[in-house]
Length: 222
Image (cartoon, rainbow, N blue to C red; front, side, top):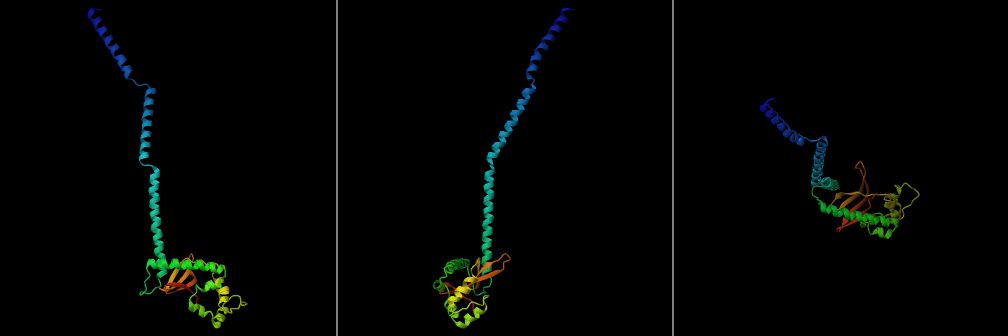
């Protein structure tokens, strides 16, 4: 081997020795690669949680509840409108009852019915008379009309001798289990207080007549 060949061999060895450490330093071990992947995945989870904090589920639920409340409010308004229309449906074209007047009349009548319930429980005849219109008192103070009313009683042993008997044996029993839901205008000054059944049919428990701005119970004639 001459000097030139020896020089080439030495140069080649030096080059190989120089590149081997460089290559080994850039190689990533499987363990290191796994750790890097886990770090990346954890970072993604944290970012997702931060996004969730920006749009929390509780806030979404509050918005949904507000929307639901709005729907309930609209439904409540619709029901009130329907009741108002039912109550005023039989009025003629010349008579008009505003919603405010309807609400005032219904409130006043329901209050009277509640007071009458206490009067009936106490069988307070004299107090009862203060709620009855004068024409009805006169009508059922007539013995002829009392006898006609007596004929319609299921218990034929009961005798109606005066209007107090009418109060005890006719008025109270016929309203003992009554429940008034709505009112119906017969005219602007005459109202029926009714119970509304599931099929929307009604049971009339009271008639009212307005005299000098005040509602009184009207007792239907027989």
